[in-house]
Image (cartoon, rainbow, N blue to C red; front, top):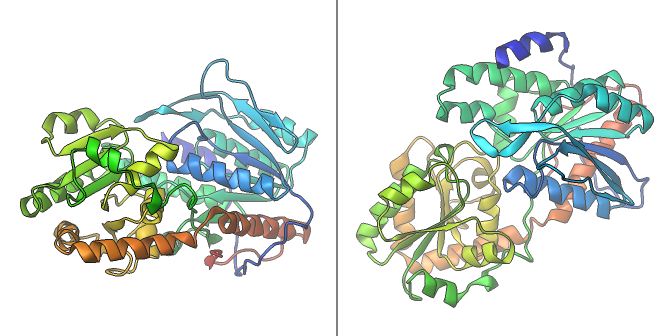
Length: 426
């Protein structure tokens, strides 16, 4: 499928990008932008991309910008939301393979050309690379509109876990062609920017994701919830939050829990989330594993803060919002030196990092924390301090700055654009 797509997309030439943008603070008193945001996923979808994008959209609106959101209709009869500075355009969609709860937008180039000819946006921001995103890219290029994109999902890495490894190269080539056809691509970590830069992606800017520090906090710890889990104040709780699916490397999470339980018999593992592996894991589980299902809002915050450490073994993330949420909740995080953890965590100071090539190092990192309760608590407190500086307003400001630069570039007649990777983190 992707090979055929690539053949069709061959007419799109990659853009030559040579200089580096230095993102500067933008005062909200500057002229408001009309921003068309195109995405395949948005709340009430529950995933990192949908959550992040909703925060960016809200933040841009609060800074006075007008946002037109183009996305698939999530269910029959759904109506578009319109306010003074926000308008939704709902298009047709179909379920995504392996993620049946999500919709993939169908091509809508003709509709977008008509829409953007009638109401021309200042910039088009494309958050996902599916058929809807590609048709938005085509329409924006035809109308000579400035374009920014997000690289938020490692689809080429996911393919390894679903029997589609043979498509990995074609998927990566498509993603490179897609993003190199834009004026700027935002990525959530410096490590990912460097990795993609080595593979030929251009115009990369690091804009990390934020965290709701008012929601996720150590103060949300709940003794009543811990009692429901059957643990006392002295009984350690290991937590996982996320999709219960093969690409999250959950077998290593289970292995880590089982190894640690040999040393700490009172240890419990709480798994928050749902997905295709849940039934399999529930059938194989011991009594120490608690499956809490989907949790949101204050309920999710209580689950985070009521645990003692967070284990995240995924190596397919571009960021991993849950890492920041766990840190904001005062948990010591054990993760591979990858994605958000690799950028944010200082090993042994505000979390524990394991070698991505060594599963035993992940297991040992968790054990070392459980064997030193005082260190576990101290690392959790330092993690909360780190996360406190990563609220959403600064992330929205960095996003806006890149969008403005893309608009200025177009207004100045296509001056040399973005360098291999510039840091836009505030």
